[in-house]
Amino acid sequence: MSAAAEPKGRELAGQELVEDLRALARVPSAVPMGAQTLIAPDDPVLLAYHRALRPRFAALAERVPGARVVDLPLEQFAVHVRAEAPGPALMLMAYTPTQHHNQMADPWSGDLRPTPDGDDLAVYGQGVTQNKAHQAVLLELLRRLAATGGIARGSLWLCVNNEGRSSHGCSIAILEALPAAPDLVVELFCTDFAVTVGNRGRVDIHVDLQGRATHSSTPPAAGRVIDAAADVVVALRELDRRAAAHTHPELGAEQVVPYLVSYDPLAPHTLPSRARITVDRRLLPGTSPTQATAELAAGLRERLGDAPHGCAMTVTEGVAMLPHQLDADRRDVLAPLEDAIRARLGEVRHRVYGGTFDAGGPSGHGVPTVMFGVPDAGGLLDDDYLALAALQDEADIVHDAVVRYLGTSERSPQ
Image (tube, rainbow, N blue to C red; front, side, top):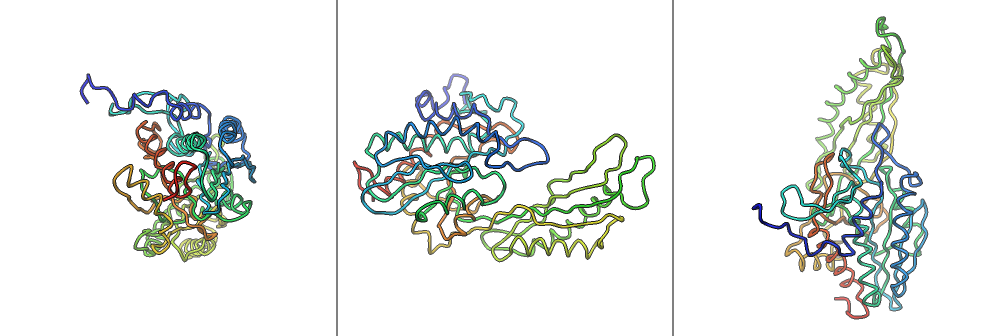
C-alpha cells in the first residue's frame, strides 16, 4: 500500500457493530497462562465478563417482538426469539472463554488501527476473532431484527456458551434445557468464512509418574521422575506413529502428542518426586476416549514396564471432545446459510476444521452442527485483530441466513 493510501473500513468506524466489538474487547476473558489450561463456567473471569455482556443482549431483546432472555445452566444464557407461525428452530452459538493470542502486549485495548499490512482498519484485542466478534454480530442481529419486527416463523436461539474445559458439558447442558432440539446449530468461530463440516475429536490423557524427591547432589539410583518422563516422551513418538496409521479420507489421522510436562515440587536443587505428561490424543469416529486411553497405557507398559526408572506410572483419561462429521446427505439444512454466504462472498467453501471444537457435542445429540465465522489473522500467540470489513461480512451473512431460514415481518423466508 502506498504511503498516501487510506486503509479500508473508514466508513465502518463508529458504527454500533464496531463499537460493540471494541467495548467487549476491553473486558478480560482469557484463560490464565500456566499449567492449568481449563477454565470453569463459573470462573470469576467469565462471571465478570458476563456482567459486561448480558446487559447488552437484554437491552436489545426488549426491542425485538417475541424475544426474551433465558437463563441456562452453568452460568449461561440465551435470547430466544419466537414467532407466532410454526417453523424451524435455528441456534447460533457464541463462546466466552478466550484461549489464544496469549502474548499480546496490550490484550484489552480495543484499539482501532490499521492491520499490519495497512490495508484495512481493525479492532485489536485478545479474543476478538475467537469470541467477541461473534457476540458483536449477535448483538447486531438483534438490532436489525428490532428494526424489521422480529422473525416471521419458527424460533431463533442466540446462545452464549461458557465452554472452556475442553468438553461438551456446556453445550449439552444448553440442549437439555431447551423445550425441543434445534434443527441446526451454527457455532460462530474463526473459520475464515468456511463452513466446517467435520473435525477430529480429542482426549487429554495424563501419564503420572511417582518417584523420590532428593537433593540434586545425591540423585537416587531409582525414582528419578525426570528421567522417567524423558523415556515416556520418547515412547510416545512410536505410539504417535502407530496412531497415525488410523486415517479418515476427510478428517485426517489420529495422533499422540505430548503438549505439557509438569513437575512437583519445584524447589532449589531438588529432584522432583512427581511428574505429569499430558498427551493430546486426536480421535477419529470409531475410537472412543476410553479406548484411546487404554491403548496408550498398554503401549507405554509394553515399552517401559510398569515402573520406568523405578517410578510408579498411572495413565488416566482426562477431558474429551468427540469427533464430528456432517454427512453429505444431511447438508441440505445448510442451504439458507450457504445462499447467504454465496450472495456476500461469491462462493461457499466446506472444510474440515484442523483442531477440535464443540461441534461434536450437539452432533452427538443428533443435531446437525457446523462452525462458521471470520478469519483468525494473527499468530497463535501473537496479536489478535479483526479487519472491519470481515466483521461486516459476518454480520451481513448471519443476518441474511436468519432471514432466509425464518424470515422477518418485512420479508418471507426463501
